[in-house]
Image (cartoon, rainbow, N blue to C red):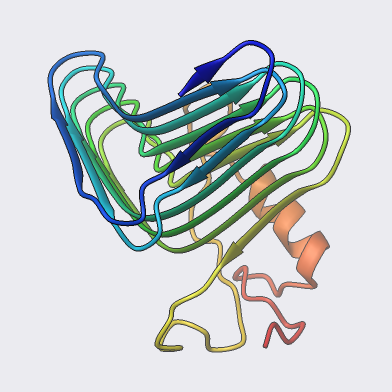
Length: 193
């Protein structure tokens, strides 16, 4: 979906999307006045160099993505990308799996608020983040849960952190301790459930 003057809307509630090739997109939505992508509980699979599962971009308004399963393979192949240069980005996903170097699971960049909710994000590859989220002037919120509840034990644990230079860093661990009242091992002492 592509529009310069309106809202780009993709509703894929009854289909399966699969692409194979370099620079391929499973779902691509560009709308100056906003983006709505609905993939329900369906699956998007892409493979190839710089192949993107779901891509939503708006220069003038919001980006909203609601997705089921997204699987990508190939270097520089992120699962879900949402970018808004003017307003908020909101991404909901069930399962994201990426395999390839520089292949983030979910990438959200917003001028306003950025919100990501996911049940499971798995990445395999060098320089690949599970969730990367940025907000220029708003809040950045990540909410991860497991549908079965087996992963929600009332505590968060940050075990490793990589700094901007790609080297291990203890600074994010210190920030996490400050934000969630974590103990010296990085376990949250503030109840989460």
